[in-house]
Image (cartoon, rainbow, N blue to C red; front, side):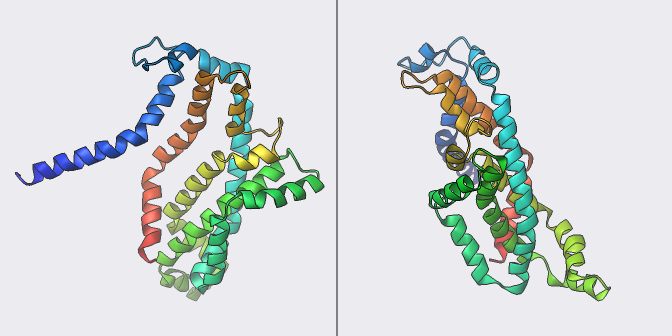
Length: 271
């Protein structure tokens, strides 16, 4: 008991030291979203203040943030669904047939900076008259989501015993049937992990939307610019918009947290 108490105290101190730098910016953003412009820029910072809701009214009523929310949702969900349709069979093929070169190629595509794809995308979509369209943004966001799905699921499929699908094939099932009926149902944690991470990366993407979208398909990260002008920055509205953008991602992570942890750890066991 004497030895465990100092260890627990040390672990608690370490946890607090890690949590404070991570949580403090979020706390500052959340509190600033309820402050006036004067309270936000005051020095020393005001910890006690009269909260207001004007910043959120400005975000959702005056700037039509609901439209941008729908745009981000449509683009993110569609990009993730299409990435799953293409990525799950590709990941299964890589895992079962040891296609390491293809795996490395996809990983390199994921590691390359997105700006290197931006100019080709811009030229292609402008020639095809697809600028400011859902098609352009969905395809560009698949460049983010598809490698994540393949990378996570190829490692996860390697942990699924081959004997499971071989037994189904002995009973007369085709490989495709065994994949759909046997492999996918037991790969739930990995699929949920892929969905969560790829959607969050798509939801928070700024660069592709900044170049390929305009007013019709503007997404949430781009809409924050509505509160920035040459004369001033409306920090209260910016903070309220940032809270609105982060809330779905945080909620999604909290709901599927245990599945994400399980999916990442199981996928890493064999590698």
